[in-house]
Image (tube, rainbow, N blue to C red):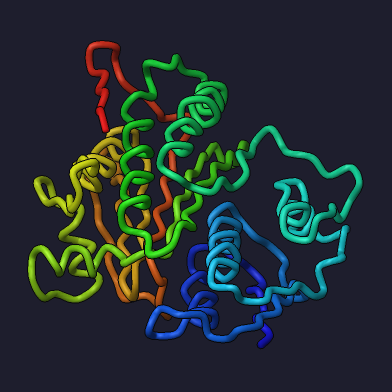
Length: 295
């Protein structure tokens, strides 16, 4: 089975991509999949995260995965993946001998709860401080949010294949942190606790203050409302895709939360969360506002 990667592999193309790969019952569409890179012209951090998550998920099911039309060293999307270590990881070689990690990138990391927390402290935190030009104490809330999502991935994924990635776009003054897992999905978790509702209604419910999907003792359950509040307070954005629903939490011109919900084209077999921060507007925490959670 041949899977064509989208020409522009960004958030709006992700569900159509995963729908080719995952059946309605949540299993792989085929025992062999060949990913065609021939049409790929642009891929951002979210596309890269989902591609990595998809391949990791397929391999966990024993699916035979192959690549074609990827040996195009002049292509900017291929260069980006090459610099992130994507090809070295999956085909054991670089496309360009000079490929190396960019200072604007924290490549995809496989999320396991214990290692994920270590990654936040020793990889993400120093990188955020350098990128945002802030003190470690000012990113305490952002760190807590990322740890909570990692905690949820560890609790709710059907297989151990969650991924997290961070990317800085200096020309756009934008920073994005993307987290993905192929788990039960937010709507399934919310419906099990709060009753019947559509996928996008369930995601909207999940970001309300006081709503929790806490299901295990080590899952704090503070979750999405705290994430959204923290990011919006810094004039950022949160995009959530799960199953057939999506929700964009944006900041209006007065700094207030504005939500845009909808039905996605295709199905995302788990949860994808993209945090966007404007590096010019980030304020962070005061020292006396610092929040530390214990898991």
